[in-house]
Image (cartoon, rainbow, N blue to C red; front, side):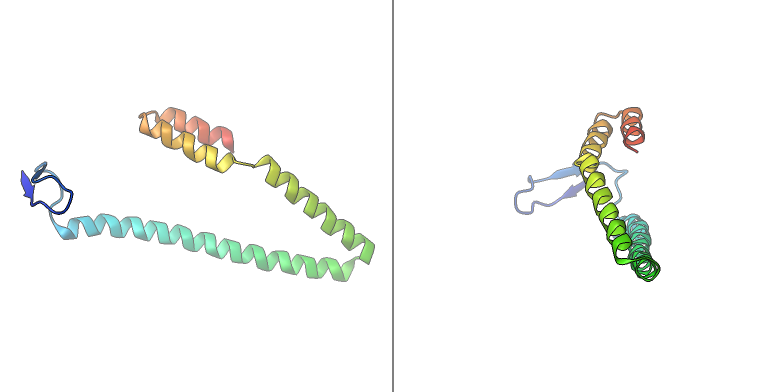
Length: 121
């Protein structure tokens, strides 16, 4: 076992199991892999968001050119109404799913976590 010296509010000696990673490099390898996966996912989401904004803008430019003022007004009003309905139907769903999945994982019930996640989609 490895003994860690006292620092601040940590008890005088904390015993670590012998199988715990003691090398600084071992800890960094795990964190580096997690960081790479997180950054890859964030990059994909960022690119997707950018493409959505550009395509939305181009769609509106084409709609303005091809429709009359009244028709474009109906188009914009329809999408505004759909956005409000979507926001109301999703109200709190993401927070609720995150909480219930975390609780299920905490109770070691991956089947329940998977069911909650599946049913929310």
